[in-house]
Length: 165
Image (cartoon, rainbow, N blue to C red):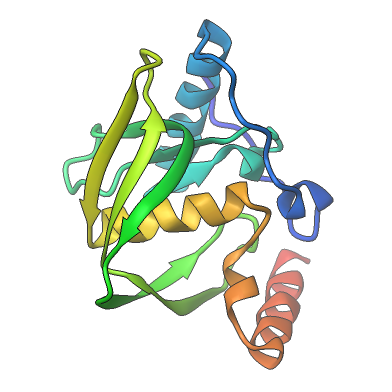
């Protein structure tokens, strides 16, 4: 498998809602593996398919310290979210060189199709929960900068473009 290139902001594919996955096939499994390879090469704790230009509702998350524990998700959705929030400095390979502190629910229950095609409900806490919410944002066509004020968003976009030159 292969690490893929993350498409740069403001590519319109990053702002487009991803298409649901109808069934888990070998092609889907291969995309997941490329996503894991890409996530590990960054290194990062999650990746959504639109970030590599694939318009499907696929995400991978691995917030383990030892790595190699990636959860492969098709059509992930948050069923329940904790009231308690957690702040975390988030970044994206689509906006290299910038990050921002984002508040999200500390814990979530997420439902998705796994690599066998089975529907799974899983409780995630801490960085796992933050990452899956970040990936679901990508699947909805939202980036972390969309959670910021216009002033902060414009500043980060300008900084990222400057660093990319």
